[in-house]
Image (tube, rainbow, N blue to C red):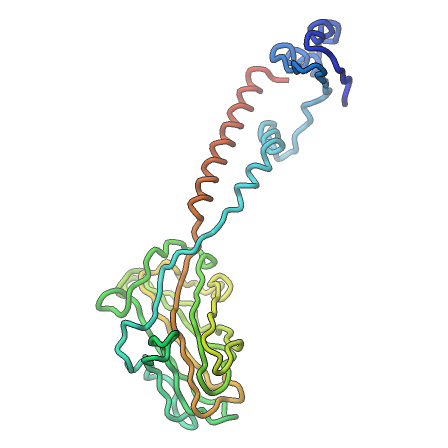
Length: 314
């Protein structure tokens, strides 16, 4: 409750303060005003005396915590939202493979009515005329039959392609998988199936975890329209799978299913993927610097509040 507000010259407080009551919270505030000389030196200063400045804190807050939250909560909330950058922890452009290399897993179901099925490293089939992973087959329309899987592992030298690196976060939501996909001929593919397996250590060492076979929506990729980038966040795509994204070895099981093809498929079906990336979100350096500055500033505020309330409590 405001007791008074006076526009007075700087010297006036010294004359009027002795006449005011010196007991209770008002008196303590007056003493502090005299000691600290909180009066402005401007021609028209304003002195506002507040009664009951120490309101009772909420039950879950200590007095100093309450004061800090009230005065500096905005600063701490500002530092809570930090910008995120992406770092690449795995990539595959299929250029290290021999052109025409067979990648069709022997357990694939290529029995009739699926004919002439193959999964190879297609020279010139990738983005910009590079190499890519190419599915080909004659799917009899309306049969909704057959599936072809390719299993490509990355455990380091002598164990497939380059192993993942820098994938330090255990949080699936920090990871995004992306790849380029095209359908040169045939019909659209509603979903491309993928299972990502991981071994704790390079060279397939340690415990194995996996995402399990999950569909990646690809129905937006048109026939003969070129490459389109598809991306999924592992936190939503593989939620609850138990997959360890910080694994030292990755293995991708890519699978085209006949029942995902429009109309059950067509003769001369061709599907290509290229430029596979796994990225991990990390705070940008500028954000880390801001966090450090904010933390130091806030710690200083706490120290000043503690000192003030210890030496000269209201």
